[in-house]
Length: 202
Figure 1 (cartoon, rainbow, N blue to C red):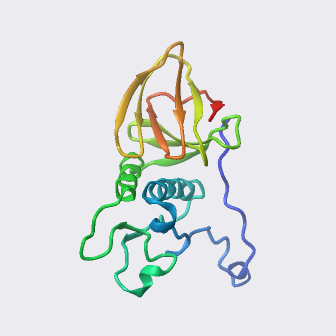
Figure 2 (cartoon, rainbow, N blue to C red):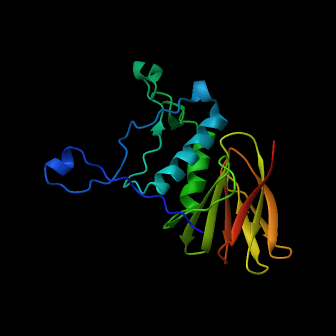
């Protein structure tokens, strides 16, 4: 069973002024993921998860981060250190630069199918249709979780981590097990998954 996330109907000023249903979207300052407070790795993971949530709610824009940190006093604001690169003149790429490059490459041209039930409220799974078959994104808000994918028959999968590293896997008895954590992992399959089950948590 797939559960497609639906945009709530908004009865605000747009309705009263005759604009009809206004789709939900985000401005450029909808989030602040400052590197000094979060740390570089957590910043990268949060940006990737933000992108997946934006897809889930069908936002028109995906506004994730500044390209690079600001170089004036605004640097000390909640958004001044949210860049994918350090501030001018160094412009050193951060882990978040790599993470968003991976998300962009994996989900380029993807269509959201919906969320996939996992039997757990702390293991998230989203399904996408891409030119390379089905792609599943999985992550947890904290810790790691064992995951079992089940298919109608045996198949070969590609697992891509947040840093773009790809690993090939094959099912055994139409199932495959791996672990998911706070960094989203992407699983590509020529077949649609029949079920995703959450296992042990740590």
